Each structure stands twice: as structure tokens, then as C-alpha cells.
Image (tube, rainbow, N blue to C red; front, top):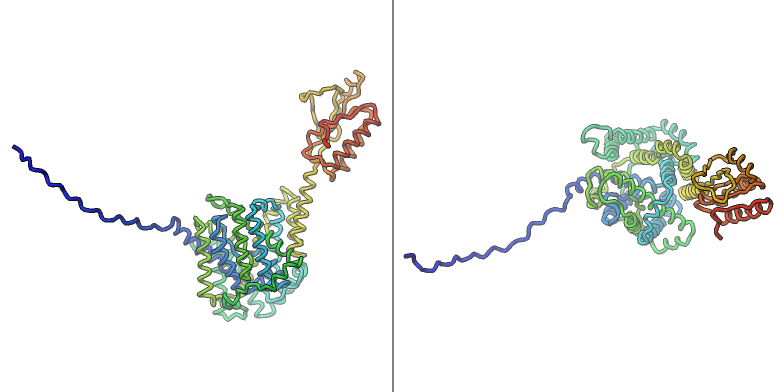
Length: 541
């Protein structure tokens, strides 16, 4: 018999407490970390060179780069654009410093940043894309010409004269005179060598080409200068905190001057247009999220507001650093924030290293950067396809080079508006003859592009029936006051002994001047002849 004794229960051991899983590293951190180092190495010589060319301490260029990384880079808008001091604003910054001083620069940048911020909050970022591309490219081309001409004088150790044409005329003499002085000759050779290294470094095979050519050129120039004892000037170094000088209360009184307000608007317009057009170019380089133009404009405005409070250079999104960021494998905004961290570490720990950088090497970097702003190939292609746009580009660039930034941009915008108004008012006039019937089926209608087309069979048939042939005049395009003389010449030349039908259905715009002129002509024509004038459709009041 089996035993009926109860089976003892097994005691369950208490489970140990569940610990939370270890936190994994943020995704794509490795790619963003590597990309940030590449962007830092690209940005470092550009920040220093642009600051020196703008007439401010080199440390302020680093401050703007830090703000572009830590402030603008952390905000939403574009995930891959990198902001910092831009060569495109060098000319305007230099003019502002000469006119209003360093304190005035901080106020101008601060006010421009506030304008950008307000426009971003109002969601006007997308409207900056409506600016004529020819004007923006002409602006950059003009800035490139000014940078190249000015930095060639700096490479020769000479002072650049005022005025674009004066600089262009005196450039051969300045370069020729530099060859007779040992110090100036060494400076020109160092600048030329810097340009050659930058251009040739990208063509090296293997991983060597991954290093930024500008950084390699600066390091080689510093090494050659130190070992060879070349008599060239180097960057003057001070403390980063000493270079930061926020504008005082007295500087804000300058905002009441019309000249300062014009400079503020020029800063806001040019910086915004360059950043948002750059965003469209960067979006073509990657398959990630597209740029939110309103948020990007807001981020640029906040960054420039901070730069103005610190008395630093203005910032924009820079296509050179942005493209380097994408090609280095960046995946998130972390890469551009980290690049600002590396600039901050360098400015805090190694500012004395800038004292070994020769100024001719920075001039060579800016000559190369300015040359790349001039779209030689694009201008030739644009001339073949759209000669009007090419003319706007050339006029804008020449006006900036000859007169100044603000004058050149205004000239380009005025020319672009005039061209758009002229094209919008393009008017075509087509004549056809038909038998004089009450209704004319559309299938029998045949419009010619000539000014006047005879239809002999219709004319003979109409004469045999005892009715003169109907003359139909069709207007298409835009009828504005700009085309009113042509329109009246055509209408007044029509014969008065024939019935006329004026077809206005092809017009996409009929302004008040043309509407009144057409109505008055129809009344005069009908009163002077035996046949009425038919208007299809009748112009509104």
C-alpha cells in the first residue's frame, strides 16, 4: 500500500532585487565625436583668420565659434549646419569696426540678432528663400573679390587703399614692390605656399586627405617660420576674457543713428540669407531630416544676440564647416555642440599656441576662401541659360567691390525687382481673321504668333457674303503700365472699317492703367467706325 504521508512543500527562495539595466551610450556618439574633431580642426584656423581680417582680436573669432557650437548648435533647426564667423561678413564687420568702433560692433550684432529672433518667432524664415539667388551669389562674389584684393595687400605687408578700384589698380605695384624687400618677399611666399598646400592637400591619396588642408597649411607655415626665422608677423595673443568686452550703455545710444540702423538691417539680411541658402545646400548632402527654416532663423538670431552681448563677431551657418560635418559622418546635433566644446577647451588651455601662427598664412587661407566665393563656372552656365540673372549677379558683385556692401546689395535687389516687374508685364499680341459670325467655334480658331496673319479664304468668303472679315486680337501675358505704349500702338493701328473682337482671356494680369486704356480705345474705335468692338471678357471695374 502506498504511504499516504503528506509531501513537504519546497520553500521558495526570495528573488534578488532587479537592478535597472546599465545605461547604454547615446546612439551615434562615436560618429558624432569623430565628426566634431574634424569640424573643430576646420573651424580653428578660419575663426582666427576671419577675426584678424575683420580688425578685431583673434580671440573674438574663437568666442563666436564657441557660441555657434554651444548655443546655436544646441538649438533645433538644422541638424548638420555648423555656425561660426563667416568670411561673407568680413567686409561688413571691418567697415563697422572702422566706423563705429569695437563697442559699436557689439551693439550692431546684438540688434541684428534680435531682428533675426523676432523674424524667426514670426515664422518668416521661409520668406528669406524668396530673395533672388542671383543677388545672394552676387553678394558672395563681391565679398570674395574684396577679400582677395585686401588679403593680397596683407600678404605683401602693405596697407590696402580705400575703394575697390583703387585696390585693384595698386595691387600690381604692391606685389612688385614686395619682391625687393626680404621681409615682404618672405611674407608673399608664405601666403602663396599656404594656398598651394590647401589646394593640393585635397588631391592626396589615402587618409591624409581627410585632414583639413587649412590646418595643415597653418602648421607647416608656423613650422617654417620658426625654424627658418622668417621676419614675418605672427598673431598677437591676449586672454580670451580680456578680449570679451560687452557693449556699455553709451554704445546703445548709437542705435538712434540712421547709419547704424542701416548696418543692423544689412547684418540681419545678409546673415539670414547666407544661413538659409546654406541650409538648402547642406540638405542636398544628406538624407536626414530637412531644415526647419523658421527654427534655424531663430537659432541664428539667438546666437548673434549672445555674440553681441559678448562683443564678438557675428555668426552665420558656414557651408565649409557644415559640409565637413556631413562628410565626416555626423548623425545628430551633438557633433556641432562638441566642436564648440573643443574650441572652448583650446581657448582656455592653449591660447598661447596662436602666437606661433604667421599672419601671411592666415592671409593665404582667406585668399583661398574668398576665391571660392566667386562662382566662375556658375556664372558662365548662368549666362548661357539666363542672361538677365547673370547680369544681376555681375552688377551686384561689381557694386559691392566698388562702393560697399550695403550699396551693392541694394543695387542688386533693385535690379532683381525691376527684372521681375519687366518679365511679369510681358505682353503678347496675336492677330487672326475669321468670318463675321455671331459665334466662332473654338475648333475653327487658329492663332498665329505673328503681328498680323491674312486668311485669304475667310476674307473672300466674307466679302462674297457681304460682310467684312472679323479681326480677332488676342492679348496674353501681363498687361501693366510698362507695356501700355506698345499695347496702344497695336490697338490704334487696327483698321476702323472692320469688326474687331478683343480677347482678354489670356491675360494673367490687367492693371488699372491698361484696363482704362482698353475701355477708352474700344469706345473711340466703335464711335469712329461702322462696327462695334467686342471685348471678351469685359474688363472689370
